[in-house]
Length: 150
Image 1 (cartoon, rainbow, N blue to C red):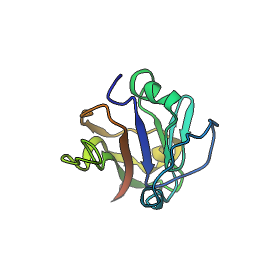
Image 2 (image 1 turned 120 degrees about the horizontal axis):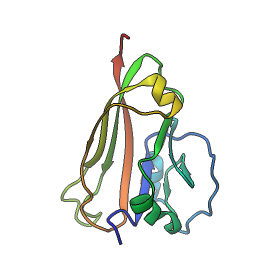
Image 3 (image 1 turned 180 degrees about the vertical axis):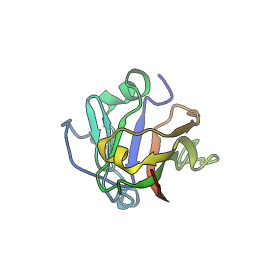
Image 4 (image 1 turned 30 degrees about the vertical axis):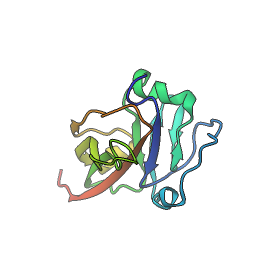
């Protein structure tokens, strides 16, 4: 089992549904569910994550070993603004022992708003590795870096 085999996604923004899958029996805590807001969509080949959810087990290994990086859409992005995308694990190593809380797994800077609206993220990518194989909680954050002139 790879380090991403178990996977929970928390989105700071949510969007519309494109792919359908059976919901997992596992439910988010009230605190985790209250975190989600906005218009962010994370799209894998067979999974469209547009809300806070626990990714069904049938997709967890595909996310970690089969599929490439997801397409990321934010329809409310301002076309001439730059953004920063950050994906963190808020309770790394585990919820019981968050020694590496807010571990940065993925950082993409200088993302153009026009590209983000189309799901074509290009920018400077910095990554961090997974620490263990427990159920991961990932939070995607978008920050506006200001207007760009091009």
